[in-house]
Amino acid sequence: MRRNADLIFTMSKPGRRCADLPPMDVPETTLSDRFQRKEALPLPEIAEVDLLRHYMELSRRANGVDNLFYPLGSCTMKYNPRINEDLAALPGFTDIHPLQPEHTVKGALEVLHLLETYLCEVTGMDKITLQPAAGAHGEWTGLNLIKAYHAHNQDFARTKILVPDSAHGTNPASAAMAGFDIVSVPSNPDGSVDTNALRELADEQTAGLMLTNPNTLGLFEKNIVELAEIVHEAGGLLYYDGANFNAIMGLVRPGDMGFDIIHLNLHKTFSTPHGGGGPGSGPVGCKEFLAAFLPAPVVTEKDGDIVFDDDRPESIGKVKAFYGNFLVCVKALSYILNLGGDGLKNASEMAVLNANYMMEKLKSMYTLPYAGPCMHEFVLSAEQLKKETTVSALDVAKGLLDYGIHPPTIYFPLIVHEALMIEPTETESKETLDEAIAALSEIYQTAKENPAFLHEAPISTVIRRVDEVGAARNPVLKYDHR
Amino acid sequence: MNIPNDYFYSKSHEWIKFLDDTTALIGITDFAQSELGDIVFVNLPEVEDTIEVEDSFADVESVKAVSDIYSPVAGTVSKINEELFDSPELINESPYDAWLIEVSDITEKDDLLTAEEYEAFLSEEA
Image 1 (cartoon, one colour):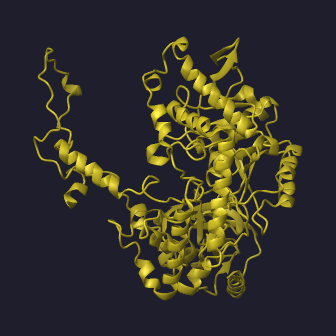
Image 2: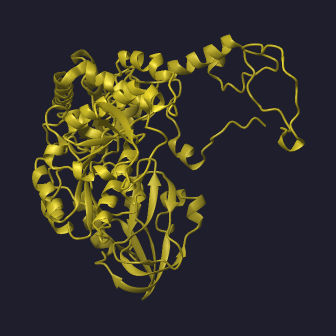
Image 3: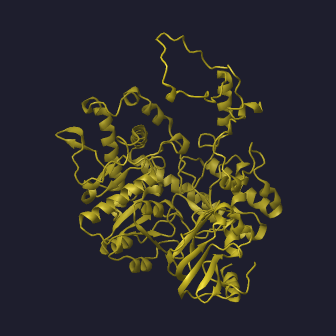
């Protein structure tokens, strides 16, 4: 019944209800005229059964990691184990209030403290804040630590943040939001940071370098120790963007590579829900010499007790109400405790193995502009395919929808033309990977034989090709009930 | 690929058309707009802003990406093409008419390419 997928407003019939409210048993009072609504709110009026069918129908149309393979590069759309949800739904976690007296929520404090301890262990950092609500929020928080550090040293000339040209777009954006000027560092032909260029760019105005390792091409920066030395010798700090941390858990630690600050994405690496199922969480860790600047309060151990420490005169201040997205922290801790140290390491190894398997099978068709072996993801280019057949990365992505596979990230990173960025994640079976490889191979053949077919794809979805240009130029953001 | 003869070009795919010795219009080339795809938003500087050679003075956004636009000259922004705010598609439709800014009091120029040199540069890049 297509009607179930109409906008809920158009399904409305006057007088229909999900439930009848009980008769009022308190005296009625009237608000002053100033506060009275002049016309009824145009809320949809709908029966419970129709409401249920409406949202069930919409949920069937949605693509997510729960119903299909979702190799969206850079986003780590890994499976979210259900036990995380079970634990986060325990009443001891859901029925507490952030303003409750501290001595009544010691269990929650222990969760925060334990999670911090494990995250420090796996990243090689000394202290962590769980406040930031997502990755870019973590970046901004970390950059403010850099700022506070230089200000503390009365070193006000350090206004520049170095960012490699392969970086996530959020890096320069966060640096700009934190008030820094951005200097772009070029890449070598092999996709790594150009150390000579970095040496020339790092100077007494350098506040820090933001780096993702493995980088956005899915390649490990082999010269990381040298890069760290160059930045440190110039007096700058090293910021680790943890977006790609899923490749290295238990294998190598940013703290040991020379990084001073790191953010993690719990909604990527630590299996908490992503996007609509969020919220996210972007903890920020740092070395001891920066700990005084972390957002207050921090959770700390004192005389065998776990307490909030609010006495932080050098703190950059709160970056989020209360203590961050607490229940997300519970889910991440559940993941860590379930996998254990060896399990986390194995997850990263499997993520890397799966990506290399797909890369090897696909590189004879789509071009691999930066040679592997890759880490947890890889970037193919459809540039050659487009020249030969007019089928673009966008067409390939849309074609995959007809195979019941979520498209990879496309047109990112910008240094690869017609990029297809594929991140299978560790939980996918060989059968699933083979199915995706077969789909991409068939699409490649179709591109050669019948490119027009792919220009039309997807053909099996409820909504065919969306008008992205129309949506961007003339966005319709709300239902106009008039 | 359309590359008019009476314009100069930069390697980052801007065109520049001199109105006199120290005044010029700047836009992006046909190649640039075709690489970007449908442009949906344009961010321009303010009149009287000063810009240096290789400064990013504007950005254009397509459904694929946001790209910085770099100035091949140093000078003062004397006009901006406000029509592009409502009709960014003009850049796709007619890239050599859809100027972004007019720069006056030009004091310095980057190494500019002629149409012939830019065409050669494009075929090298391809």
